[in-house]
Amino acid sequence: MKKTILILLVSLGLQTQAQINPCDSVEYAITSTANTNLLMMEAWVNGTCPVNFPCVISDYSWTVCDDNLCYGDTGVTVYFQQFMTTDTIKVCLTTTMDVDTMTYTCIQCDSLVFGPNGWMLLSVSNPVSIFEIQNKIINNKMYDLYGREILKPKGLYIQNNQIKYEQ
Image (cartoon, rainbow, N blue to C red; front, side, top):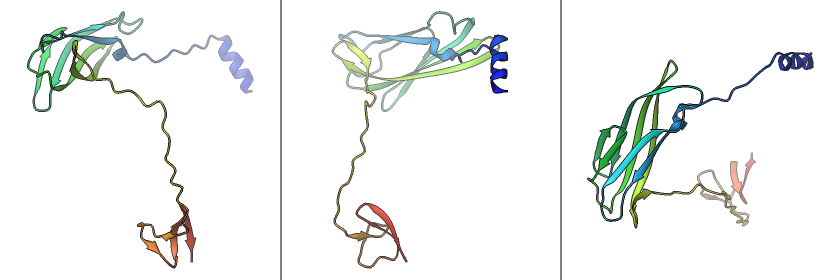
């Protein structure tokens, strides 16, 4: 029966469509030079927003913060010069767009530091692998669940990294 339904669906042209996230179409660039703390940012929609759907951007809203203050501006291109070159700043772009009959609000945030060529993304790499550290202490001592050493076990206790039970 399952094979019959599958064949019927395939023969009728069952099509699946991947979900499209309009926020993936929004990008921005950071422009800066080594000689000044001036930060310029420009936003745009990459290609059609999203594929096969026209969109209307109703707002580009920028927020740039250091440890103490935040500054904001709106528009495709914005400029900020309030920050010291020793600051680490957080840049957030909030884009409001209308796609088909839906309104989307997209938020992108990055951290910037001042480097040899001006403001640049603070790169924090993703972990390649994570290893659990194994504690291999085998001393036959017994501990209660609070980590206190006990001499005569009663109930749950830990011995050689294993939970045990004694009545």
